[in-house]
Length: 420
Image (cartoon, rainbow, N blue to C red; front, side, top):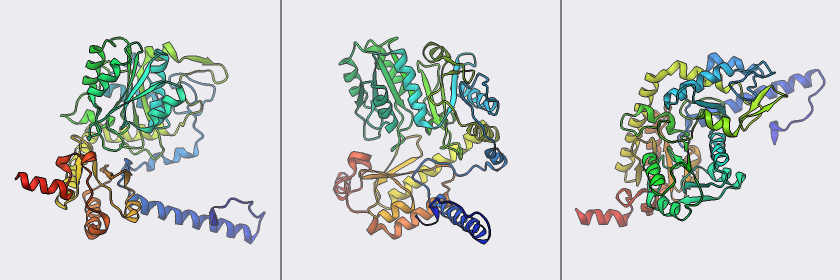
């Protein structure tokens, strides 16, 4: 284990000084390692662009947002004022009036999904969870934890829900209410399920007033409101909850997330007073990170709506550039409309995959073009990809993953030439 091994420190003298020097050197080396890894991180949706320097000092404070964010608790060292400001911002973004929403800053997208689905389960104890095969693994984890039947819906090659299969499986279970997870940007392909189509199917299949919709919007939920062509994500539609990840597009240095749901639902199913902390038990966690709300507040306050709009536009443009360049290189590539997740055939060289930290699944890999993935970094990636072209890729068919029209294997390429 080397210098990372934890043992007892010397009591004093030169040995103690040497130990402190060794610790400082190890930390400096580790920082260099992280900086190098950050420079080659393009496979996972983390934004390294934003500078949180002015609020780093709060890490020395023992902040704990225990209990409900809207209630003062016995522990007075917290950041609930910042948390409420962040929640207000997201409630406005998704058009839920201040007196009708409830929410909190979570530990991340998984906790947001777990809380949203828990509200659905409490409202409909006999309900069945419906979610697509391409959903985040936390959805299936939540179903297992809550012991709720979970039915997987087929997906198209794009990663979007197959609505015919959704309708078919709903009609097989008409006696049980539906708890539906809608993906606003799937993990691997960035696909967005059609919320309006899902609502229409639920109502046409006889589930009116017997369904709950949770929107897993970890990455894309913060982007869609700033894309003019994108479908509207709003509580004016019959949804129950939305969650996003704060460490993704915003780039909070602490893993976190935001959940927004309807106040009437929380009051109905999850409001138990806990005398010990003098607050209501409405969140999944007891003690909650009090630093994350300050970081989120600082980022949103600093960039604003206009800044986010420009950032989203730039990411979309850079994603289209990457997809075009890969296609010109003869690489099978797919990019969902209004997405920054560029999907392509998986390189065979694991050293290359690890260096660029590509997220892989089966025959495909992806790059998520976050704000820090600049054109310069994209070109560096492409240059290395080009140099190792023969070693990195074989002639394999990925039509099932990216669609026949996007597959450039010899079989589909020959067919395209014949068609021309």
